[in-house]
Structure formats: C-alpha cells, structure tokens
Image (cartoon, rainbow, N blue to C red; front, side):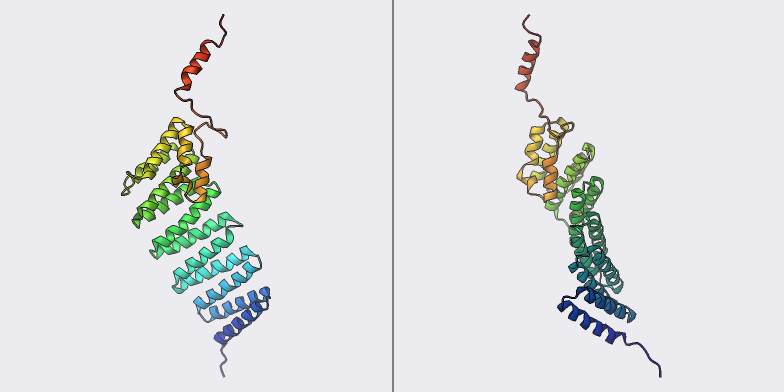
Length: 281
C-alpha cells in the first residue's frame, strides 16, 4: 500500500481554481493558486508548465500594480524555460518584464532587455537580439548613461553589420556620434565614423555626409552648421531619444545659450569698432 502524491491532478485543480478566482476578480487568490500550480508542476518535473504558472502569477501581480513582485516571478519563469530547453519563450518573457518595468525603473528594464538579448544571441537569433539591445541603448541614453550607451550601440551596430543590414548600421553610427559628442569625446566620435567606412555603401551615403558636416561643425565650433545638421530630417526622424540628443547638442564651450561663431562678414565691422573704441581724439 504505497501512496504517491498525484502532482499532475493537483496542478490541474489549482489551475482551475486560479481561473475561477481570476474570473471573479479575486486576483490575490488567483496569484496564490497559480503559485501552488507552479509548485505542483515543479514537483512533477514539468518545468515548462511550472514556468507558465509562475508567469501567470506574475500577470496577476501586474494587474494588482505590484510590478517588482510581478517581474520576480517572470524572471523565475524565464530560468525554468531555459532549463526546459525553450529559450525563445524565456527571452519573450524577459522582454515583457522589461516593458512592465520601463515606467518604474529604467535601470531594471535595461537589465531585463539585456538578459533577453543574451538568450536570443546564444540561440543565434541576431535580429531579435539586436532589437532588444536597441531598447537597452535607448533607455541608457534616456538616463544619460552615455558610457554604457556607447558600448551598447557598438554591440548593436556590430550585430546589424553581421546581418548585412547596412542602412541600419548607418543610423546606429549617427546615434554613436551623438552619444560620444555628449560625452565631449570628439576623438571617439571620429573613430565611430572611421570604423563605419568599412561598411558597404556608408562612404557615399547621406548619413556619412551629415556626420562629416557634424564633426566639422563641432571641431570648428560652428554652431550654425551644427544646428543645421542636428535639425535636419535625417536626424530628427530617428528614435525620439536620439533626436532629443541631437537637438540638445552644443558646440564645445557653447553652454546653454550656445554662442554662434562670428561670420566672415561680421569680422571687418568688429575691427572697425575696435579702431574707434577709444573715441576720435
């Protein structure tokens, strides 16, 4: 007379209870039932179904506006998905968790997107990985973490180059240059452009011409030319975080007001003014 727990039946009953609580809008009880379902599946070594139940518990917490707790369970589910051999599902769960955290904690959202990207990269799913790294890059820029953003953009650009998506590489180079100039690192900005000459089609593109004009304007402290480039449709139609970087960029020493470099036509007048600065006598 050996008795063995029937975890499969228990999991099924907990799942039914969770749905009933959810339909009755009793979300706390629904969350608890999903957690009990997850435990039953885990005891039965059914990792995929356990992960699904943990994710559902997370969704109940999301509806209860308890986002950090929700994300903890989704992260736990993602680990189980990987252990189960379904990494794509893990990455998609982490992506959803990142979206939940964006309004609350940008740093945590970046971490989740980077985790999801790493899972896709391990599976050689470069397009999905690059998209998630892109989300992380934009959030790093939004937080003005420019050192991390520069590294993230470099990784992103390398992925698009490997996929031979060259026009997107050009846009990433513009973003890199904007970030490096906000770091006041003109040499690093130049290097980004020089490295991009190896990307097919870049040297003859309007992106390349705009970047060369931008670097020249920054180097010569020509604010008029810098504004012209930064407010061109090529730049302002980029993702909003990069467009804002462009609009706020100033020449070195320009400060908040941004002093315009004197034009050639203005210089003789200045010299004439200096000649009579002390009066006629």
